Length: 270
Length: 293
Image (cartoon, rainbow over all chains, first blue to last red; front, side, top):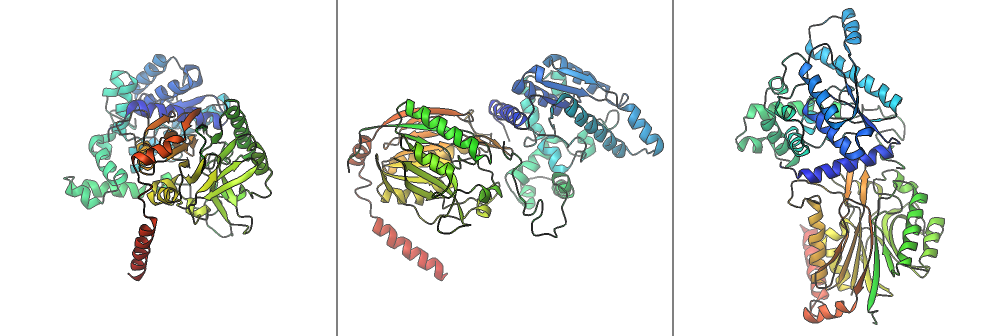
């Protein structure tokens, strides 16, 4: 699972540079939460394109994650990139005043989609490609909001497990306090990913790596000493979230159908 | 056979524009002129250099007929000045609708050889078998520089392919490739783990067939896949003559001494002692046996 960090940086910065250019942009925009993933992504973007080509949007809801906001500002000022702080409370509160709920997940999803909507608006205003910041761990277990934080133009880090992103963060010299803090989706004050998912990232990544990268069978992973319930639960999470990783299926009725047998590359003519 | 003593090869480690024949033709002609200015005798481009790799349905749309395509005719014209090896989607002239992932060797305004990729990777991230017909032979051909053979990417990883070229008398094995890099846990901090696999084969094939191996791989990204570059030339002694950078566009010319083929074959008479008829008979038995199983 170890990564060769300088090589990864070289590949990912080339990817950002090339894909941004191919998409017809010369700059990128990303949502900066102050967490590990978006901070690493901001560092990569600056290394790829330069500080004047990266725009960060910090989009807090009330004081849900004030530490995150502080860290986001720290990253933006450290990198000397342009940033806006946009409080999403008014529109979120307006909506939930009509349809009240105590469900943190519903609220979190709504906020993630509001942030997505703002990112796409800024993408058009600033002519900037949206960088996604989802990592392989959360993409695999579906720990993200479809059409929310998962929405983007390109995703440079989607093939790196959370613990690999952390290693990359160390290599890139992220502020210590961001590297040290517990990952959070900022769903409620004090929330941590690991408590919510019910497994620590170290262990989760080890299991995913064996199942996905090494193509081991669940029973082989269990035989290596991993708790069977954990393995089963992770496989369930992967299965249940496949819909988040795919375009919605189209009912095929014609002789040539988008997604079935009308197949063109994403980078067509680029 | 009379070998020229010295030969200058240009390697164009490019990143083609996916699905744009005109722009890629421009690149080919521009680099061919550059190679010619540097007095190269031959320029080698990567696999599917005229179209890009991740073609899907574009494969059949961008297929070229070698008897009538204007683009191909322009390349034939360019080959009057310098020998060209490049990759294209080839549609059979006598059997329309059948398209191949092919490598062309052009020289003096003529097609010297067309090799249709035999081994089409169709698993994991690859889906070539879905869009291409597979070639049915490995054949050597005479060039100004002695007998040569062409392979396309995965062909080279099946060592029987190189053996056929060796048995067919090739002293120059040219491999054009669009090999994406995979794996970042390796010790080589400059490239993906998979780059080693290509170099391993290059070293082994060049040494054990006492032939030059020229490997031209592409770079750039297509739909997230990163082509690793790292093109190289190995001598008939299995020595690395030059490796181009990984992951970056590059262009180089280098001189090779074709006398080394004969010298290497005197030092290590693998070629003299080879018994293709024994291999053939053995293979025949193996195949017959397998068929009966």
